[in-house]
Length: 448
Image 1 (tube, helix red, strand yellow):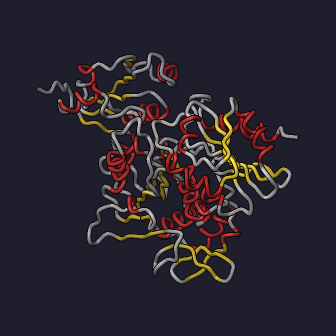
Image 2 (cartoon, one colour):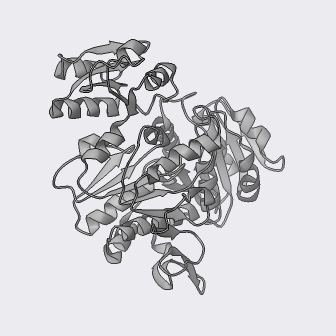
Image 3 (cartoon, rainbow, N blue to C red):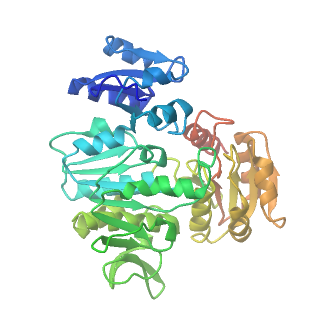
């Protein structure tokens, strides 16, 4: 029997960044609500008590009876909907929702919705830059930067939204103008029962979408489609009519739309085949919402990349150094290794390891064997990564990031590149991937 007390009462579950944006939004709307968090001292608790002292807040273990007083729970992306108290509330008739679902109900401008195992932030930022270059009032955020509800405004003409699988778990009808899953590879297996469950969560982005963009080279990105659905595509192969891809003319490679050559890839400041794919995905999404090609291409020429995403740091003794600390899963590391490895004259010296989140590192074996001179391993799962790699590749295990940088400097030769692309999360040694990347950059800069 349902114990729901009121159809007008809501509870925000989780008081982090998105939770606090929900508090602000609901208070502005005049909705009756309370807050719950599994932590005794959640990050935004002091802010909540200062700005909204009238709001009831309960910290610690979730109380199912309390949750069932609400008709709808707005659940933080950090909490799985399978959490027992949440699952019990849902079984008793309470709707589980999230900030993205609420955002979609109130957004008045078209939404470009972007997810994938990797490259979400880069592509979302590119789409935002393209729209801005085209003179659009664009709001960029979601899983990247500003929480979705804080972006809502009457003068916004386009939303470019990065969305994680965690956010999509509680998103029922996004109704995006165009939606894409950029790529799919094993990630967050500590939260999902396997790839099928992860795949299903990602594909919730397509619910109610008017158009979709798919990656021609990743069949897992293609949803079941209505007959009348408009479908765009991108890939690193030669494109068909009305698709984006790569064409070769002589020795030069070009970003292309159908038969039309758009931009030589050597004019991109972001290096590697994976970044060419990112550029093509952004073009396909921008094209779907009617952005003109000229400003989109100018935005691509101007884009220098995001911090910790295959970011060039310096050149020393003929060796280029790159920070790809954001590569917290195997798929992201694969993209960087293959993309950068195929784009340089020499070999890679790879820095990898950390918290593997239960992932299988076997897929690293072939590209590391092909593109890497050596692998320097750090962190808790360094041994597991080492076991997965081919015996022909030199492997060095070290205790610190500073020591890793020193060994890379000894191992790399002129024409090589040193790449921090860990294929692992950072929390075994660092506060987050940003700190890992920042400390790596400091150590690289400190080299004589």
